[in-house]
Length: 369
Ligand SMILES: [Zn+2]
Image (cartoon, rainbow, N blue to C red; front, side, top):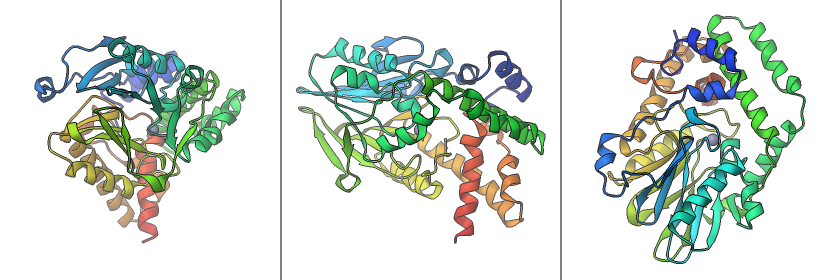
């Protein structure tokens, strides 16, 4: 039987039906403590600069800060990000789920430096990284993102604004009613929670679009902040719009959602590619052994979480391949994956956003071979 984080399905459903939707979903995703090996890493400050529950900001290098969200304590930020502070300028990473979240990070920057903000960056277009973008617009801060991110924000989220909730969630509710198995029904219920949350967030946000599109042909791109150089690079995997921020001199990487630390990866995007993502993780694994990663979700980590995420993909692909070879139809296969014991505490944000599409995409890759 599948597990949702460390909760049984019955507990999960009981909780979600009490509170309905995203807030219950988020409450199942507590942030683990910093790993023991990182608590002795001299780059990382053991005391956060600021901790608001929903997120804390911690120094992770010389002029480098990570904003780490704890979704179980509120949905102001939801994703992770951070900021880089040079002698001349600063770079802010992520637009977060709400303008309040982006503003919180700006306030944290101002606790340590008054340098002008050169720009903010959305690592990709997804709502939890971009619905707070309007803060940057209101603050006169330029906002960079992959060249296709602005269009994808408009295409994905403007149809939800002012929409009738039933029109958005109705088709999913019908699929839950028509589910062919208990597993499928439980999985669809997690999707309903996620879509309801997305609907609520997109509806309560004023969309802000990146106004500094980054031409994919121009990566890697260096940004000089004064004694601190960041390198932006675009890599395939999660959304087709993913940009990472590397600080090569300090072996620190802001990986966006190309890295889920201790989570099942979110693979639903039409531009997500499983083989591409696994290649990207192979690249990450080849970075220096002391590389510190700021993941898009989950706790700060070193190379061990790259190895773990690669194992998660290997496990999904291994189980899917057996079913593919045995002729199990894809619609059935995507609900048959069994979470192994070693990953049973990994949050599954929603089945149809993580494991389900990973399997359907793998099937598609194999069918086209
Ligand atoms: Zn994402």
